[in-house]
Amino acid sequence: MHSQCVGYSLPVPNVQALATSLNKSSLVPEKYVRPEAKVEPVASIDDIELPVIYLAKLIDPEFSNEEASKLHLACQEWGFFQLVSHGVPEELMEELKVDIAEFFRKPLEEKMAYKQDNDGTIQGYGQAFVLSEEQKLDWSDMLYIMTRPVALRNMKYWPTSPSTFRDNIDRFSLELTKLASCLCNYIAKNLGVAPEVFAQLFNDHPQAIRCNYYPPCLEPDKVVGHSPHSDATGFTFVLHVNDVQGLQIRKDGEWITVSALPNAFVVNLGDITEILSNGIYKSVEHRVMINTENARISLAAFHSPDNSIMLRPLPEVIGDGKPNYGSISYREFMKAYFDKQLEGKSVVDMLKL
Image 1: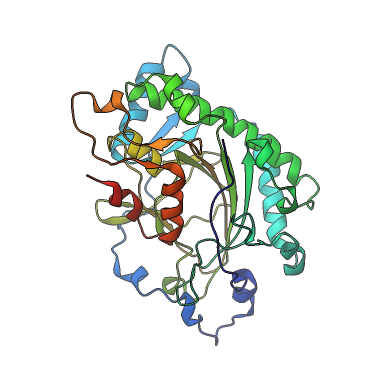
Image 2 (image 1 turned 45 degrees about the vertical axis):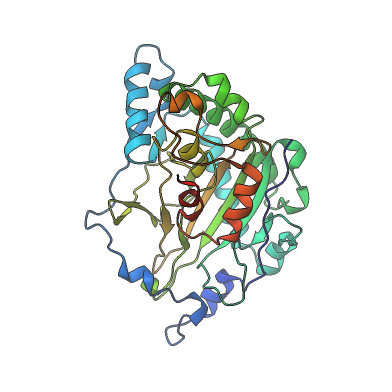
């Protein structure tokens, strides 16, 4: 049984319009000023490259074991990796990038035709995780849609312009479902779990896509594009729609800026995988920082477990050891996640035994 993503977000001003209205003499509004962004150390290494996993090697019997070992290490030590030679048609990816960039270029009133209705889901154009009038806001706008299973789609939130948007998202979401299924198999095997156990947990591959627009800001060190958080998913695929970087991950107490390879997916493990793996794999905190001159545009595709599951470490992974996390229904986990307004890894930490 699947249900739509639980969540609610208060309507807030459009950041793209706000950014356009600010000139050199205007200050960033107080609601967006984030002094903590400057306090935490950022690694001096510029644009470190994440581990790179070749899907073509993973599925090739000759190289599979070696590449699966690399995948295991990336999941253990980083919780993030880049996936290349993944087989998603480059032409489709390029067309979709054009569609997304074009959608965000449209006049505000056209985009607002797809605005969130606060109908108990966060689908639509707007913002997520805004739960109070007092909280600080992220320097970004988003379009969030449920894509799989197909029965959960609410087409009123799917832009009809550009005219190719719906078809390209549909094709892309199917390609990612195949990719997610394949990745699930190798992650399961690496954890010593039968792939069908994972397949059952991720039944129907619930998938949501979030298109992000991070406007430039003349005072980029005052704002945060996306607050530090880990994802409440099995795993997430991120596609850079343009070449503006800004994604940072927390590693060894520092923020590291990620440099994405062309047409690679930046894949990160979510909280669900951390719990299922009993902490062998970690979900990693990440955030998005802002550029002075250029907007950053990205797409994140979230792959979640079946809504009806009880979330707990898998017995095959625990073996003779002890569980490091308590159990919770996935539905309750998601409720807690939304209630916490993206506070780092607070929900996973709450489950630690």
